[in-house]
Image 1: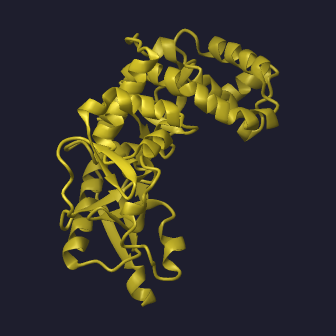
Image 2: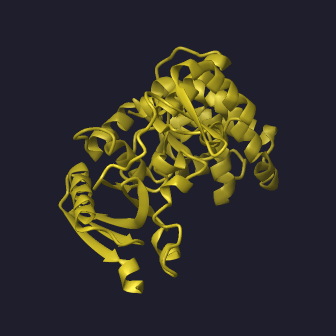
Length: 342
């Protein structure tokens, strides 16, 4: 599934795993964790300046394609932190020495390594930028989790070799995966998600346009697979989406998902859409939070719109699925904020 999607945004580690779980039948959190432990899926900075899950076989060509753009975007912040190429070179050498021979260290442990090398990683932002650069350069990727802590490993030691792609091949492959899983979408949507320039995004689309259909709506060209999408919503479907889910983070223009909440009740919007998202029949309808312990999980749903009983039952079914994913008993609490404000 991660290969089909190309990448899954995952700065919320648990949320990113649930994003995979929702798209794979009967999978559990432990299944996804095993794939990460085995290195079939890795977590690194790619596409944009944030973490993504990526299939191990894809990480090298994706980094080569999108890494330079991310480094350019981060350059002004690097200068503010007094990070230049000399510092990054010294940092890479220290990190390599600390991790070679298949060692895996946490960020805190690598902070000590960098401080001992007199690189200066005491500030949270400075350390974050040093490690991001190491990821973007293909030096490190995620290692095996140590309890609740992430670790880093040398990419070339952790992951087997994989076929390289020429730049045009990589552009075409990324475009193909994007529109096959997120269409109907525009070139602007693809450029936003991929981090590519508008010119490169269009070049990728041109390379695969014969595999897709397109329609012009309100002056915008939308690309998608198969026949034209039906102009109807599927009844009584609901999803408890993690924050940054690819359903909406994969699109620059998310207005089509906001029909129900175009004119939200005063006071509802700001307090509801602060974490994970409730989607009902393809529309944003509220938010939800999770509280997980070893004994169970509590889901609190806050709705911004009034829903029908059948739609509420769909939310209950999704809550049950989340409990099955975690292999924990689940307790659901729904607060109809819109009704309360009325």
